[in-house]
Length: 100
Image (spheres, rainbow, N blue to C red):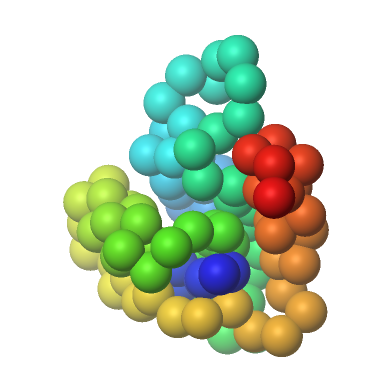
């Protein structure tokens, strides 16, 4: 299932650093062999929030949201089902990398 982890209150100056912190939550070693455990990508939401898209089980999505909360202290983090059509590529990426 595709989820969005919304990080609210990130301004343009913080965006790059915040993306890097969140990326390291999902992919601690940037140049690793094989696929990431959870396919992911970034977008910007309608209200300017940073949006992390993930393809994961409900349990893994909740775990990822909690890990993101820990690295972006001071920002509200909300887990939601992905909006229709957003991050469709993550499901395809998961099928290619993990089979099925």
